[in-house]
Structure formats: C-alpha cells, structure tokens
Length: 284
Image 1 (tube, rainbow, N blue to C red):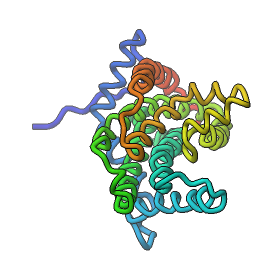
Image 2: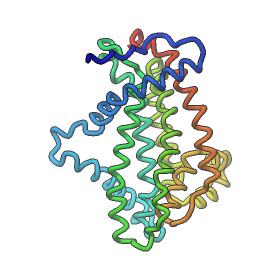
Image 3: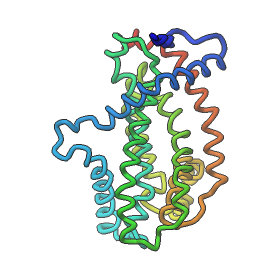
Image 4: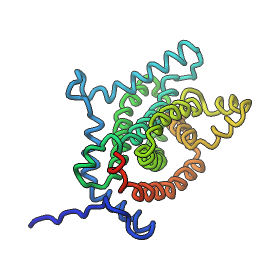
C-alpha cells in the first residue's frame, strides 16, 4: 500500500498564531527522520578526511578542558579542589550552548541552495543544528566520566538528575537558535554579532570561576552584577556544577523559572519563524 505524501508546510501560516504554532510542531514531529539525518550529518561532518574520525567528538572537549586548565589552573594559579572537574562541569554545557547558537544562527543561510531546489519545512534546520550540538554534548560526557576516575569521592547519586538540567537547557537554547536563524537571513551582521556576544557571555557566566566569586567581583561593577544575576545560563551552569562537582541538589527554583519562561518564548519563536520563512528563498 502506497504511503500518503506528507503535506508541505513551507507556505504562509494558517490563520491565527495557535494554528501556525501547532502546525509547525506537528510538521517537526513528522519530519523527525529528516531532523535526525541533518543532525547526524552535521555532527559527523568532516570525519571522512579525518585520521581519528569520530574520536574527535571525545577529544575536542577534552582538549578544550586542557587549554583552560593550563590558563586558569597553571598560569593564573587559581585552582579549586579537583579543579579539572570543577572546570569541565561548566565548560562542557557552555560548549553545547555555544555550538547550538552558532550553528543554529547559520543553519538557514547555510542551506540556501537546498531551499531553492527542494520544498521542506525550514524550521527543521535550526532544530537539527541544536540536535547536532546536543549529540556533541553527549559525547563530551565521556571525558567527564573519565575525570571521576581521579576524583571518585566527587561522584554522587545527584548526577542521575543530569537529564533534567539538560532538558531545561535544551528548552532555553532552542528558541534562541530559531529566532537568530531567521534574523540572520535578513541581517547578515547577526552571525558576527552572535560570535562576540557568546564570547562576552562566556566571561560573564560562572564557567571558569565559581558563581559566588563572580557575584562578588561583579558587585563592584554594576550593572555586571545585575546581568550575572539575571543570566539564565549562569543558573544552568551553576546547576551542572552542583550535580557534577559539589554533589548536591541544584537551585530548583531558578531552574523552574528558566523552564517555564522558555515555553512561551519557544512558541513565539516558532510563530515568528513561520511568519517570515516564506521570504527566505527570495532573500537567499
């Protein structure tokens, strides 16, 4: 029995925001295999000409940890106890966030030629980009687990709650990637601006230093203290460090705020994306 072709959803949105959003979500579910294929191909891009192949998915975050360890732990001599674990507990999720936003911002523009030739829901592109970065994060958990071989006393049952923090980070990251991917089609400076903002955000988040030290340092330089206190990624990174390094419960109140705030932002991002997506091919 021949399968029914899936209806195309690249035209103008249906009447009303709710209809547009629901249609977009259903379209994503139906195209889950396409999302999986795009995410997998992005994650493994370049392996064919690489000597180590898929091993780089594990080596890349481990080498990044080594660089920051040398700079902060050796040169600046500001290590915390079990400093490699302290660093990696926050650097790894920040790396996921950076990859998701960077690749998500360029996801639509990068596929301009394909969009001109094939009709498909453009929303799968930023979603697949975020999915690829999520896969990279999963591989990064391997060197994180290896660090516990040197600090077994830091391993506690609290690490079992890691998927909860991952889910909240995913909720927060996805709408940002969707909105920026649409904006980058019409304003090419967005891609360059995002790179600098991510670099600034890295130093305004508790990735290299503890959240308490960052707050104390920022208190003398307003509004840096306000930015740090209202930065959702600071709360998320602090939660990872609570689980991986301190072996304690995260700040559930802060995580609930981020999670619930992400839901309406995600719906708005989907609607805005669908509203402007019919113009993508014209601009590209």
